[in-house]
Amino acid sequence: MVGKRVRRKLLSCSFLALSAASEWGYPDLDNNQDEPFPKWGGLCDTGRKQSPINLHVKGALKGEFTPLKFENYDEHQGALQMVNNGHSIQLSGFAHDLTLSGGGLANDFVVEQIHMHWWSEHTINDIRYPLEVHIVHRNKIYPNITMAANFKDGITVIGVLYHVSNTPNDAIGSIIKSLDNVKSYAQMNVPTHVADSLAVDDLVPSVDTYFTYAGSLTTPTCAEAVTWIVLTNTFPVTLDQVNQFKEIEYKQDKQLHNNYRELQSENNRALVLVQQQQQQRDSAGRLSAQGLGLIVLLGVAVRQLQL
Image (cartoon, one colour):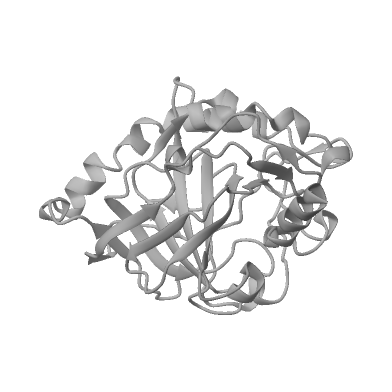
């Protein structure tokens, strides 16, 4: 009975996959860079606050909020569940509520699930990273993620970008250790236990500086219910680690080589660059050079992922 409840919870909160994997998907850009991104229909095509977008220092509004507060994110999760839903790898089944508050958020938000995109969906100053992790939170005033998706304040997603490094990422490595149990098409939508204990804190670098804007889910139904918090500080990951995610199957003998959505129009939305007070003494140019300059140095290495 417990196993059935866990499975129902995993599948119900997998709003990433509101339709079968065969009904929407991504172009295989590793094998055909000219393949167009498909149209997913509905709000995905007609919405004016769609995500992801290019995040840019120049022209972004400068903001200062109270610090973001994280409750139970440092708690090691020994019973996490992982599922290949045909569009991503998703983690859920947290032992206690992991609550996000502060910043520009008017309410408390609780973590619903975590999933990955290989390449990144957001770009920073037109640079695309090899991996992006989304920590999806539901506004506590709504009873479930499905209802929360109907309201503009319903969901907050923390986006964490990963840059290429020769040093393996331990937290990502902990997730990869269990990938063999969900890689094949036969295992799709069948949850498995994550062998290694993992604290969500391990997936979150410094939150002193981040971009925030009003956007949408990046998968159907593309509900415009998301407050995005995309951190400017990045974590390292190796090319080998990223390539292991590319072995996930979404059809029989068909691997999910990439699962990012194309960039959407900003449509004159407010894009805010939030900095702690001491960092606001720096100019945007200095932030770009120090906090974001790493992406220039890594540009050549990142392009190896396309080979």
